[in-house]
Amino acid sequence: MSGRKKEEGLTDLTLLGNQNTQYKSDYAPEVLESVDNLHSDRDYFVKFNCPEFTSLCPITGQPDFATMYISYIPNKKIVESKSLKLYLFSFRDHGDFHEDCVNIIMNDLIKLLDPRYIEVWGKFTPRGGISIDPWCNYGKSGTKFEEMAAHRLMNHDMYPEKVDNR
Image (cartoon, rainbow, N blue to C red; front, side):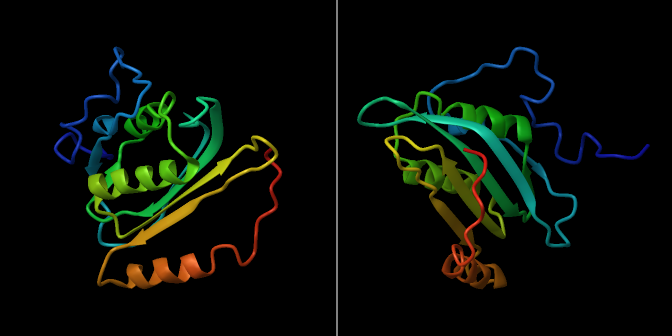
């Protein structure tokens, strides 16, 4: 039989396959789960595109909508995608600025995964005639990924992308 075996990090998962899933609507980092990275001997990117992210303005309570892009190079753990979906859903009634949301997401994933490298980019739809697209990243200290993070940060908006999804 091929594929991941139960003893390869699957025994601790509580959400995947659970038909009684609770959808929390206020910030819930405790729902995040991880599994063992069976390919930790190589560097590779994992990218999530999450086009239905919502949160609330902390002052007005008005909804904010975004596509959240999360890319990381795993170390020993990878995030379980259903738990990530539920975690991102938990921002639904959470009041924070766009910049705070992307940094909170990145910090929670760093705490969960201890990745080699991670970046989070929120592409928020305009409200009041302005769109805000905060981007943050992190590279593991003392490694080539720390240098990579600095380089990507310094060159992040050198070639702005064409925005056609708004």
